[in-house]
Image 1 (cartoon, helix red, strand yellow):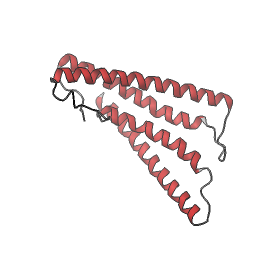
Image 2 (spheres, rainbow, N blue to C red):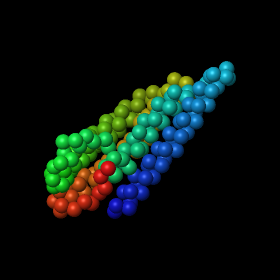
Image 3 (cartoon, rainbow, N blue to C red):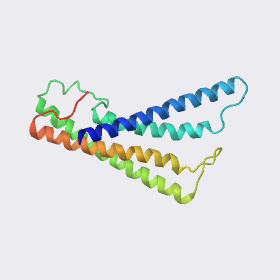
Length: 166
């Protein structure tokens, strides 16, 4: 099970990274074109907006799996391992609930834009496409988050480390 979740998280991060590289190239070409008097890439802002949202959501699963979210442990670093495990498990459950809520709201936003048929200004692609890609990455995040939350709770019960922490 761990290998499947790891493959899913890594695959999503790789896709997000490729999208991010593409967005950097698009922004570079658009900016260079504008500076050279050739004009910018039409609709680059629209693509950038949708692509960055997807990229952000696509990096969450790998970050979640490896416990690489930003933490402030100045007060907890001196606590016993059992207490730290309980704190980590608690925040893992809170983060999982937050990701599930975000996923639900992304889905609802996507449904709203599907229903009203709104399109972007320049390229005229449906706005819901950006929501759909972000939602897909967020679903992967939900799967990884639930998996991690279960394992973190098991760590508290068993006293063993089952997932890496940053």
